[in-house]
Length: 104
Image 1 (cartoon, helix red, strand yellow):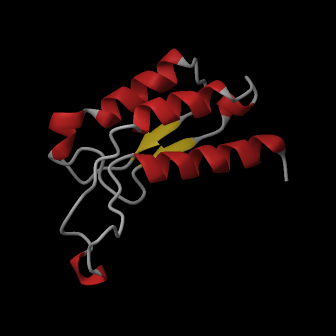
Image 2 (tube, helix red, strand yellow):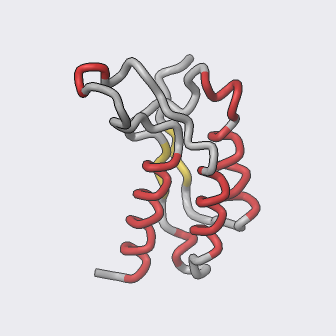
Image 3 (cartoon, rainbow, N blue to C red):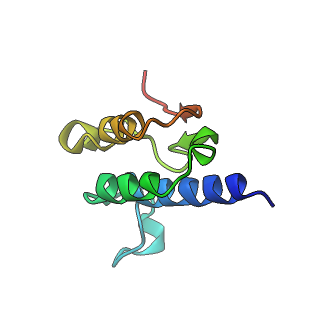
């Protein structure tokens, strides 16, 4: 397995865990989908992870929101998706960054 794939997979995992992803913390499993925990330290962690990548690793594709819509109502308050995209720009990330959303 190549270093780039490994780093890209790790970055995808970090992003998935950070952006507005509901976790079962004191919530019954039946309530899944009824709550969201905003990861307010997401951008700090993302910037740290991006800084560890080599120029070659910064070419890997990244996919945002395979678990949760990044443009749900909480985005208006926290702006995590907007800040995450800015973190990629600031890190001079050259790979494709995709976003899946159900909002129109």
